[in-house]
Image (cartoon, rainbow, N blue to C red):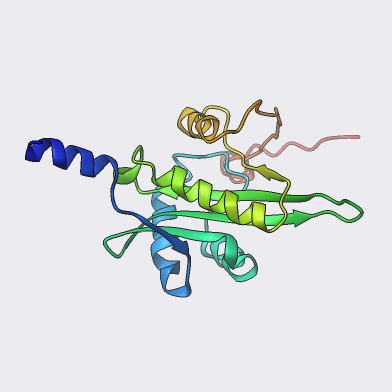
Length: 176
């Protein structure tokens, strides 16, 4: 095998370690998420990528906060939580954030993170795992289909950018 072939193959399957996130990973995870989940790239996020969101998941659901590491550098993360409803025997899992550094996308890092968090949630008693993404995020939709999600449930939510309305002087009162 030539060096070029070896280089190509090693790039498609980098030596990645998946592990539980620790406090020292917080800055790297946060800054990677800042690069991936920008308002210009994903303007309709109903959750906000900020340090409070990351810290809250880390503080209360640490076992579902994972990082992917390559050469001592964080190249991906999965942050999740579980939901238990009163008077329900079902426990739900929600993978809230999954992010992979652009240079490691399409290399299996996202699938490894997903499979690891799925296994953790299964062991904790989760019966249904949920994820969400925008309808036009074809990359995410294809990824989630590949890892086993079927039959996307339609869910419509509406958004109103109040700061844009205020800036343009368009404040309309609804009578009723």
